[in-house]
Image (cartoon, rainbow over all chains, first blue to last red; front, top):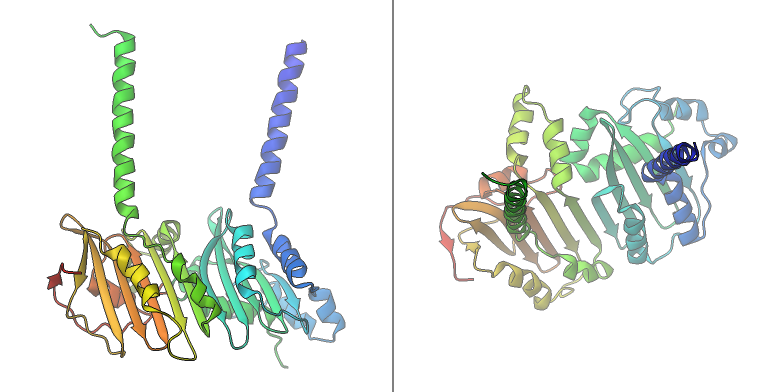
Length: 182
Length: 193
C-alpha cells in the first residue's frame, strides 16, 4: 500500500515537474524580454491601455492588433506588443545584444540582427517553432523609443520572412504599431 | 551457435561504428562553417552592422514552407535543399581604414585548409575585392565563403553545404544574402591560396 502511495506521488511529482519544465521551455519570453529591456536601460514600457488613455485611435489599433484589418502579417489575435516611448536607450548596444542573445538562446533562433551606429538603432528578429506554427519576436530599439512585438506567422508570411528577414521584420513592427489616420 | 552475449556484442560494435561514421560525417560538414566572431569587434566602429544566421533548422523550416506545386517556390526550394546554413556578417563604415588586414586575414586563414579552393575570375559589379572560396569534399562542394571588402565595407558570406556560384547568384538578395553583384564565373580554380 505504502509502495503504491510512493509510486503515485512520484508519478504526480514527475508530471508536475514535466508540466513546469514545459511551461518554462515555452514560457512567456515576451514578458521576460520586456522586463529585461526595462532593467537593462532603466525604462518602463507602455501597453495598449496606456495608448488608449493617450487618446490614440485604439479601437482601430486594437482591431489591427487582434487581427481585424487586412494586410496584416500576423495571424489573427496573436500579436503581443510593448512600446517604450520618449525614454533613453543610450549606448551599450553590444552589451545589450549579448545579453539578449544569451536570454533567448535556448528557445529562439536568431534570424537577423542589425546595428546602426549613427542613430543607435538596433533591430533583432528571432524565430521559434510552436507546434505547426511559427512565432516571431521583433525587437527594435532607437535612441528614444523601442518596440517589442511577438506574432504568430501564417505559412505564407513565414516564407516572406525567410526570404527577406530584415524587411519583413521591419514590416511586422510597422504593422503592429501603426495607427491608421481616419 | 552464437551466444546471446556475442550477439549483443556484435550489435554494440555495429552501433558504435555507425555512430562513429555519423560523427565523422557531421564533422566534415561542420568544417565549412567559418568562425566569424573574430569580426564582432568591428561592430563598435561600424555605422551599420548586419548579422544573419540561418542555421540548418531554419533551412529545414524554409524548405518545408515552400511548396512543390508553385513553380517559383519549387525553384527556391531547389536552391536551399541540402544547405546546412547561411551566415552573413556585413559592416559599413563612415570613414576609411576602420578594419585591418589582420581582420581579413583571420577569415582567410580559415579557408587555407587543404580542401578549400579559391576561385579565380570572379567578377563583381561592385568595386573592391571579391574573393570566393569553395570547400571540396571529394568532387562535392561542401561549403562556400565569400569575402568582399571595399574601403568602407566588409562582408563575409558563409554557406554551409552543397552550393555553387550559380546557386549563390540566385540566392543574392534572398535569405539574408546581400547583393554581391557576381556576374559570371567559370569552373577554373586556383589551389594556390
